[in-house]
Length: 276
Image 1 (cartoon, rainbow, N blue to C red):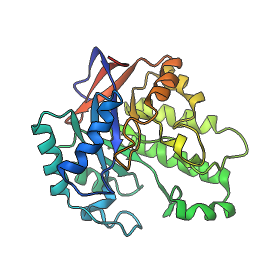
Image 2 (cartoon, rainbow, N blue to C red):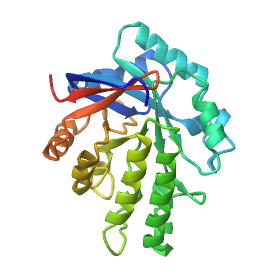
Image 3 (cartoon, one colour):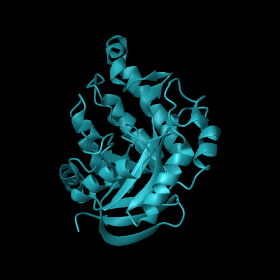
Image 4 (cartoon, rainbow, N blue to C red):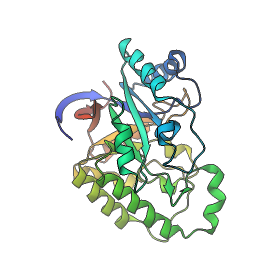
């Protein structure tokens, strides 16, 4: 990541917020912003799913194309022009073999950051609640191996600024026979080598697994590797931005992590993490 600087400042950003359940309007977006700021969030990052835009229709086996990129860009630009502390983000699914289309799409707009996430394994959207029954017939150990292999590819691709909810494979509480610490370590090495940030997310506390992303036992390894983090609520409604961030900060600081990454025009800076 070019142009990185370290600034010792108190800073809390929620970089994983979706507007998808409402329109791209100032009124809808302001509800998210106001709730985030009321919880002490310093900077609000909107990060719409890339598969909502028709340019990415061929990439994923989903019938969910319901947004226009220009409308999204105009909205966030207008919010910035008001002086609101917002950033233009994108959550982009990483799909092996689609590296060039992903790069082309993320270059189409002045994104401040791009989250790379893995939600599909061989076309199976493993974290969709509608698909939870399918897990009963799967080899869970093999699923974890595949997931972390793809996640490592996402990290190594150089396409992303941060990797989203990095152990979301556990979302429904299905676990391998033994702890996947070796899979995590291999992924961590890929993230370190690629200089990509990792997302620490409160969203898992509100899923069947009932655990933050990533496994809190893995936070010290992020610190030891010197990998920067971003914070996330993965909000899909106006009430959720910044949700449980006090609890999230407790976990992060207990692991010795005292800074966070922030982004402007795909350039990373490091700021002191904490309440001002």
